[in-house]
Length: 564
Image 1 (cartoon, helix red, strand yellow):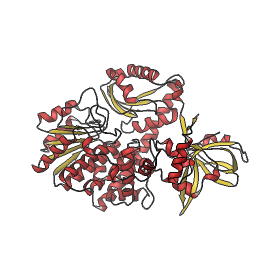
Image 2 (cartoon, rainbow, N blue to C red):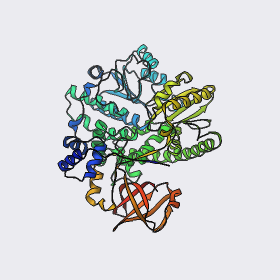
Image 3 (cartoon, rainbow, N blue to C red):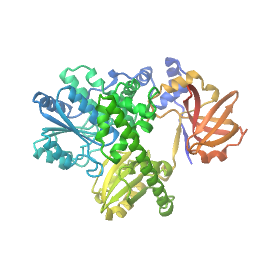
Image 4 (cartoon, helix red, strand yellow):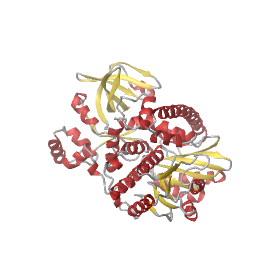
């Protein structure tokens, strides 16, 4: 059951001024003010973000130290070792940094840990591999902020470390040559929500400025930034919006060989690619090889110029993703059975599940699906011997990293941010952890916050959905956290014809208001068919407006979020 939250009306004078300045309807002006856009200049930056909107990378603490150390490595022909995470954010970060340093004719290699053998973050095995390769400088991307012991080990082996990360720091910081992380307490960078690939991008931007390489030296990699940022579900506001918008423009020109091969394999070549296509089509395939095997294959896909090699790797990613989906579905069904039979879901504010035999590579995906279904902060733990590896996923009003911090005495280690985290735990500590995690949620979450809310931008009449209106709505893209596709409410709609359930539980029907009739579809909402009666004219519905492309034709459809 959703709670519909209709956005409050902004000050009429502000709305009228903004609508007049932009030449748009008051509804469009209201949607903008819902997103904090209140002036012509703010609207201009929102709709037409440009390179000039980016912040000075040297405002990130330690950036000057990082650039100086890399400049020295380039001058002295040192060997540089890039170490990244095995998800899309980490893979794009590694690819970006590797390709950029290759352009500087540096002796550079990369390494991504084995998820099952090494787990998340900078590992001893990885540091030792760097030493064996003869590296004297190690750059972490999308990880490293909590790797105090591993950075110390690198130092004893004669390796300097630059940490480039976006996760929350722990109690202390590694003793590194430089630590780039906007979430550092001492960092005064104006935007704190960059993805890991965003921080890596700021580093190559700073190097380009310092060495006078020109703007294209870093701008050429903005497609990788968009890919990693969208996949990591970071807020698509401020600098992230600029980078993702510019990056999507480049992705849609499919200049990069690996992205072209992946688009061709998934049937996206020649079609518009937005954040939705990244999150639901491209990212799962890039993630799959890291979840089930060696993520370095995904890096090879993104760095190669060889079309045949790219096509072969894209085929492997497709196959691995099919395997991942099968394991994912089995785990999800098993998790639901445990919840329904063992957990008191109506009495508890959290879900903590632990099971031997679960694949640690898919539990993060399953945890997200459990959150979606039950709307509870969820921790899934894959037990291997006497140790469990866990993935935690949250709901909007719950900082899961802070909750884990309260429970850290029961954990071997943890890391992440407010929406997602990973952890390791001794199996005998799981019951105590479950109890303390629930206690943290009791303190941090009100009972009313466990009801899923849908934010409605505005109430409209179907007659207002004109071609111009749809074009303007599309310009709000790229869509993502803190800038979701606008949601509308229309009341007293008439159900046209007979609704039906199609595909995998999708609800399909038509609605009329006055002389206007639109197709409506509710994905995975088949169970709501009972609320629809042919001819009924008392239907209230919340939905987003999309364009559906089929058989060469583009048609406006209303994607239903809920109906009454």
